[in-house]
Image (tube, rainbow, N blue to C red; front, side, top):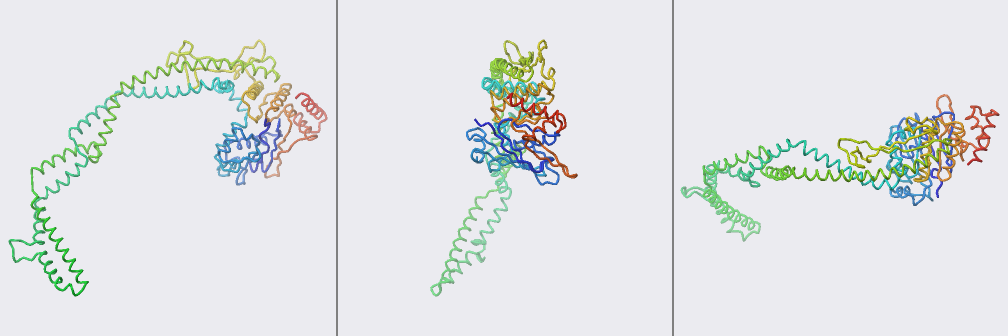
Length: 581
């Protein structure tokens, strides 16, 4: 088993930290210091390394960027290692190098195993590697939604399987309901749309337009409207090319070309160049003859037919009525008609569709009711085990008489609910259950929601107990606790320290704490120290061992490193911690 993940973290130009190396060991590491800012920067750095939100304000003033680098030990078969390798990262003897760079302008870059990756990948890896908990997480535990999530996480596959099916049915029900709403509430608008489509389609069908007919008619109208001018021009051109029988003395192009051809043809044998020109003149004569014949035929076939012209204009007017309403051209009109027919068929089928959707809607509600009951049963069974395990942990955290229970209930409704247990109840995307964590801190006290019945110290211990239970059922290699011992003191603090030490037997535990009773149980004690040269404040991280650790615990106990009483108490704490692990 890999007992540690985070080996080392280097921080440069981040807030008050200019250049620090945080070495983390297997087991339990405590991080302390005189003020919270430096310790918070350590947690902030870890957050950046694990894909947390980046803020340019974190970069030290005057620095170009802040860089956080980390060395992580991972099992090559773990989900995190597999995901990193899929992104192109390389492991070095089971060690994964990750880094996060934040520029002063706010740009953020991430690297994993020597490969540039999206920052989101760091968050994906963190889900499998590190569980981070702080005071904000305690407040989150007060929300019923988070309590339900915690219970579902503990229940595992017993809830996850039915919940996945429920979520799919719930999404489909939402889609079906939306479509039904659309069909029923907009019935009048859809009927009006259908009437307009029907009228337009009938108008197009009555005209029976053909593709390209508008262009053909325009060309024919142009020709018929200028028939006399076209015929006259063709006759003049024919006379110029082939001659006019009524003017024997006239000179035409064909005669002139024929004379030219005879002139050069007589002497072509004397020069090849002239022979070529003679051939070309002959070709011109043939072409003139062909064109003259075509002009004669064109003039004979051209007929100024006013009746046909009137019919063409009438047809063009009918087609123009269509193009004004349904498209720029007849092709567009025909495309509109095709689409309109499909839409009309859809609108005309609304009644059938409403019937189909109503039946599906009822079936989905019945299915959701069955799945919701399955979820309730699974959550109820898991809640008993979860509450019992958390209660047992609280006994180890100086709350021997406290008892945790879960209240799982549904809200009856007369509206659009689902039937669970023979009652119509409200439901949502996660089922019909309202889950609430209750705490009875001592015998005789009624169970109350932890938001109302738990003090700050009790809430800290409840959250720690929940996390310890998760460590046994759904473990991650590393746990980071940021002042989760807030509000705890005295004997309870000692028990918190002892429980964290026990958790560190199966996982790496990093704790930012103000309590010497907790820090005494750590395998490794780190202190964040600040220095100030009058213009710049810097922080560094130092490992406390031997006499240095006694002095730090003395400071935490009494605010005086050299107090004999504080030193004696610190040594006693360390001795008790070693004996009580």
